[in-house]
Length: 273
Length: 298
Image 1 (spheres, chains in turn orange, cyan):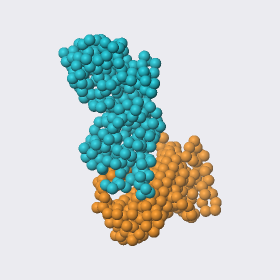
Image 2 (cartoon, one colour):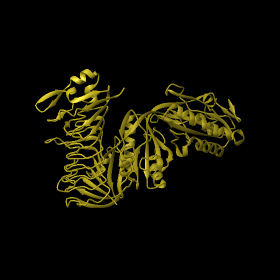
Image 3 (tube, rainbow over the protein chains, first blue to last red):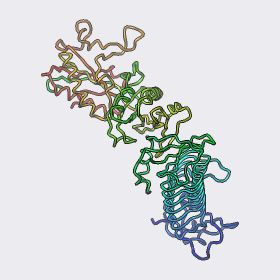
Image 4 (cartoon, chains in turn brown, blue):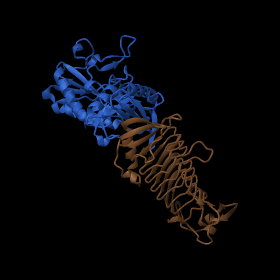
């Protein structure tokens, strides 16, 4: 079997965004190539046949590849529970929204709301992400509730907004308001973080390997330097990941800051010392 | 059957189904991991009055423990899952949580899980922190020496308790030496513990008593001082009997432990005063697991 490949046609150029939520292993199971070609994809206020947008080849619905991708392809991996989706190129908003298993790898940048309300599985972005990675949809209280997101580049603003569980690993820098309104879970950053780190954070852990250049908010109190026993376990869990985090030398000595004390103050920023 | 002058009785040990789990206690160094494990497994020789049977399975190198520190693997067994959960929780709370630098992990997966540190977290008075790592939940409980880290749950597995054999010797010293030799070898076998003091019990019991309040009493048939007073099972030259009780995660594990233990006793042989190997049973009517001595040593 060969990977089911959706190659985005270059002409005519995309005018409207395309909802790709119907193109997952779950949705395509048991479908023939002909059935897949006839799938109607939402675009703007109309629908288009899948084969009018993509050249479709291959037959393995558990291994889906988007080639020549565009940042106008939204909802890639929507609610997927199994299989693997690989994206060659940039992709649009809501990649991996409601994802509950399986694996997404993007060789490019993603738009806003990547891993929005994700429940399980793994998303790896070999590039940068837009704002609200692992966040909740506007008006919703719980963002990501499980799974792992790896970003090899930089993440946008409000990474982990309302995040409830799971792990976001950022190999580059995180934007402003990283971990804002975070409810729980873990965000680790190898690079720098932007302004207003962990603003209104409730619980959870932000793990930093360097002191943030913008400093720690006055709403976080210094709890001193400590050796925390859970950190070796966390680093051991990184070892199996295809990420720079797997190569980070395990450490357990950290400076601990607790906050946001304007709220319940049960969150923590741990900075390697 | 006779091995090196030691008679292996044509009898069997009778054992019972139990519920068990393995936990791993780690600490700053091997000394403190052992102290915590010894506290956890204290007063856990017999379910008759202790509520559980527990023992140290073996010491663990840092490379074998979840947090990369020195550790000790402990096995604990009880007659049912509820009783086991109660014993694990109270012992973990009083003996591991309290022990300096300790951390507590599950050492076994099971179809059923029970609380390990799940309820100990409330000691954190709201400052406790949950962490999901690799699909397992851990609790970080702030304590005066730093943080107590505990896994939330541990697996419960169906196990076997009460495997045993009796060492009949010409003197107390010889019986003890033989049992010590047996225990030394049996401790090398994984998945088993010998829960009595030093692994050896000198007060084997029979079911029932002349006193209504007691459901077990001294095994008078094997008490050497009663040879002329009761229906004794001892020949004139036997002056001391000691028992080794084994609990394990499976019948096969107990088989192995009994084999190496009995072999160690037989290696000392008749020239060191060892006369017989026997076993305790209840006629085969109470326990579904029968360990036939001669089959094990065949």
